Image (cartoon, rainbow, N blue to C red; front, side):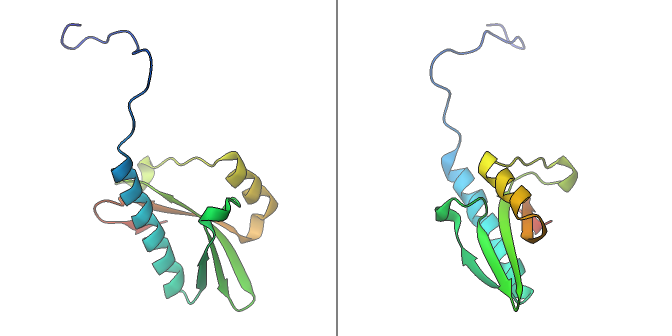
Length: 114
């Protein structure tokens, strides 16, 4: 293959993504989201392992929010595009008013929440 030219698609296994980097991004997203809701006076419970379509339950008095966390290393909010799994989408439709998607961008440098 010559420099600057694309070759045919590789066959076989796809290369593994940088798993360590992805885990760092997820951990930062989780921490930032939990701190955000904690500062708003919510009690937070992680339910990530239960695979219920959201990651956190945030409760404050009679208010309950079901929070799906999406974290990315993308720096500009305008450039962020997140997707929902079928399970997350189903939960968002069923739990409309209490469901929140918490987006943490620039997770590896200066994390911000949207």
